[in-house]
Structures are given as C-alpha cells and as structure tokens.
Image (cartoon, rainbow, N blue to C red; front, side, top):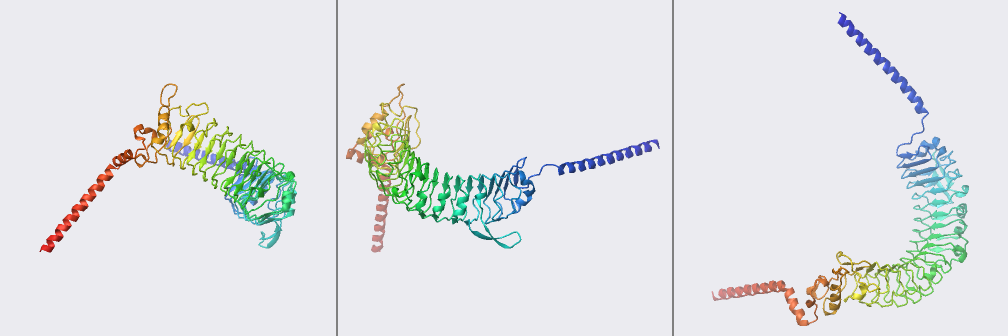
Length: 551
C-alpha cells in the first residue's frame, strides 16, 4: 500500500511539473509575439534587404511587390527590381519615398508609367528603366490603370529632380524623346538610349547642357541635325555605333572641345571627313570599324593630335596616303585589319613614334620594305598574318628593340632571313632554353608566328640553316631555334627545317628526283604490285577466253 501511494505521489508531481512548464512556454510565446510585433520589418521572399532597409534588391518578384514594401520604404535609398512582372507604374506607387536615390526596374514588362509616378523623388540621382517595353518618352500613352480603366498619361518627367545624373533607358522601343523631356534632363551627365528604335538625332539633344556621355548605339539613326554639331555641349563620350549614319555634321570646336571618345563603327560612312571631327583636337579614342571607307587621306587625322587609339578595321581601304599619321605622334594602337591594302610606303607610319600595337592583318599586302617600321621604336606587337606577303626585307625589324610578337602566319613567304631574328645590338633573340609550341618561335624578346607559309627547304635556306644551328649562348649551349616548317619540296613537307641535314638542302634536280623516289618508295611498291596483279588477272582472263573458243 505504501509503495502504491508513493507511486501515485510521484505521478502527481510529474504532472504538476509538466503543467507548470507548459504554462511558462505559453507565456514566453506571448512575450515573443509581442517582441516580434515590435521587431524590424522582414524582407519578402525573393528579395534581399539591408538591416536598415536602405537597400532592397528583388528578382523574379510578383507585380505587386512594391505594395508589400510601401509601408516600410520611407527609409529606402536604393531599390532594384529585376526580371519581375511589373507592367505599369501608378501615381501612388512610390508614395512616401522621399529618400530614394537609386531606382532600378529592369528586364520587366513595363510599358505604362503614370505622369506623376516618378515625380516623388527629390533626391533621385540614378534611374535605370532598361529592357522594358517603353515606346515613347514625353507623349501621351494609353494604359489600363488599377481600376481597369484606360487612362492617358505621360511617361516619366525628369524635371523634378535636379540631382539626377544617370539615366538608362536602353533596350526599350523608344522612337522619339520630346524636347520637354530632354530639357528636363539638362542636369543628367550619363544618358543611355542604346538598343531602341530612334530614327534621328534632332536639335532637342542640344538642350542636354550637362551631358558628358551619350550612348545612341544600336538604333536606326539615319540623320543627324545640323544644330547638333553647332551646340555647346560638354560631351566627353559619344557612341553612335550600329546605326545607318552616312554623314555627321561638322562638330564645331565649342561642341567637341571636351570630346575624348567617339564610336561611329558599323555605319555607312564612305569617307573619314564625313565624321566631322576635324575640330575635335582632344579626342583620344576613335572607332570607325566596319564602314565603307576606301581611302585614308593625309588630312584626315592631322588635327587629332591627342589621338591614342584608332580603329579603321573592316572597311574597304585600298591605300593610305603618305603623311596620313604625321601629326599623330601620341597614337599607341592602330587597327587596319580586314581591308584591301596592297602596298605600304616607307613613310606611311613615319609619324607613329609612340605606337605599341599595329594590326595590318587580313589585307593584300605583298611586300614589306626595309624602312616601313623604321621610326616605330616603341612597337611591341605587329600583326601581318593573313596577307599575301612574299618578301620581307632582311633588316625590317632592326630598329624594334621592344618587339614582343610578330605574326607572319598565313602568307606566301618562302625564305627566312637570320636578320629578322636579331636584336639591334646583334644578339641572337633565341638565347633562352628551348620553348617551342607547334609552329611558334619563342624568344626572349619576340615571338615569331610563322605557320601557313610556303617555306622552301632547299639551297636557298642553307645560309639560314647554318646560322641558326651555330647559335650558342654564353655557356656554349645551343639556343632555342626558330621552327620553320617546310612546305616544299614535297619530300620535306611538314618537317622542321632545322632538324634536316645540310646535305638534304639542295636545288639539284637529280637529287630531288632521287629523294622523291625514296620518300615515295612505299607508294611505288604498292602501285607496282597493283599493276602486276592487274596484268596477271588480264592474262588469266585471256587464257580462259582462248580455251572457251577451242571447245
């Protein structure tokens, strides 16, 4: 009996402890709920928020994402919404967001923007509405409001924020921007309108008095207003690539005094003078790639004394007049590849005293004279591949001490000269341990790429063969040798010139015939066997036919 009473008391005590613990947990849960009600706002799903709610980043969010944040966006300074399904912005979308400085709504389906939806940001400095479906800026656009009624409203008016410096409207379907809107962006410094459907640069762009960078590439521009060239803009960078421009009005000095970068590539320009840059003396980067320019005149670049990078590749240039670069002593990179140049005079590149990169590849150059690069002492990279060069003067590279890469591949060269591979002091370039990759020549100073030529391994290369094999370093060890792959005669084809014996480098026809037979010996044996087999078969057939007639 006593033991049963003890057990009952223990059970009762355990139940009491459980009840008390449960009541405490319930009280703790209530207190946590009260504390959570006062806790900071938690970020929504598919969004990232900073602790102070100043920065919010959302991706693949629903159309009503801003509504969920509206009560807590009073302190927000940076809001970025990407790949969402937002299609419209209403007048009350951004209420109570007076501290907003950077707003990004990109890669969405937005086509409707209410007139006052973006006029509530007095501190806005950065606006990105790229890759949406905006068609017109500054004209009425019909869209359905939140009550499913059709309304007419203007697209964003930027006149309210004097702090706005960056506007990105690229990747939309904009065809026109009204002068009112352009005047409203007079404080903007960077304006990106690329990848739209703009057809013309009108005089309204002259109202952008504070603009430093204008990007109108990948549009359908065919005409540039004359007033654009006579404006007093402070432009530093102008990008007009991938349009249909045939001529740009002459940019007066006061309109391009600060211009440093200009890209007019992939247009329909027929001459360089049609770019209208004769007064832009401070320009440093000029891209004229993929146009229809056929001639470089001696007066095309004479006023561009600060030019550092010039790209005229993929045009139809057939000749370059002497003195074309005499006033471009600061030019460092020159790209003239993919043209139809056939001849280069001794004084063509005479003025390029600071050039480090010269790309003359994929032209029709047949000959390189001895003094072609005589004044280009800073040249490091020279590309001549893909031409029709059959001869390079022996001392062409004698005044190029900083040379790193010379690409001579895919030409018609037949005979190498030892003077190509000598530094100005006479020291052999190949004075390091052997380092050869396929058909490359690696040196301490230069890398010569020589594949795809018609190297003849006969008596004409004996001198070079003897000279290259005789090169040794200060320790008396053989240096790395240039890899010249033979093209002819056929029995040497594919072999390294410097691995051949000197006795096999001959121009004797009997010698060639002997080695031709030895080299093709197995082919002769196979053909002889086939012929004997065919004769035996024909003889057997003739005997069978004779026996048949005798029967």
